[in-house]
Image (cartoon, rainbow, N blue to C red; front, side):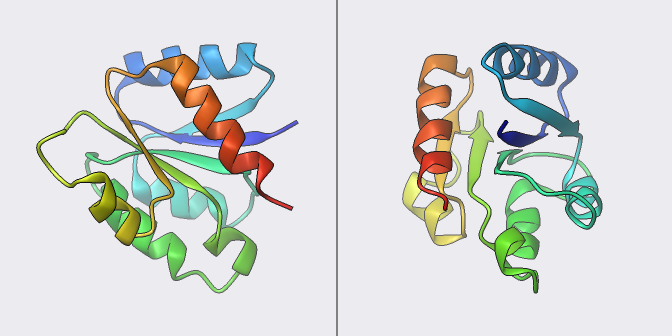
Length: 125
């Protein structure tokens, strides 16, 4: 089973996303900010991270940069999909330049999200 780390500070989005992904057979762990991501990655492995970009404590870009700087090559290269409602912020190209693998705009089209997850996870060895 593929493991997803969902990073989302909104309980509504977190619960909806978790339910949809678990119904598709994924194992989903959820945390609320970037500092929790780094703690969890210290002891667990995931196949992909779904990362909200605007969170308290540590936001998505700062967290992504920290992940990309990890010594553990597997964890450093984990695919990250950005979740953002801020379409006026960074462009997709700017997110990709920051180490994000793909971008999904909120409100989320869950069919599209599943396709994006599968395309990134299936590329992994």
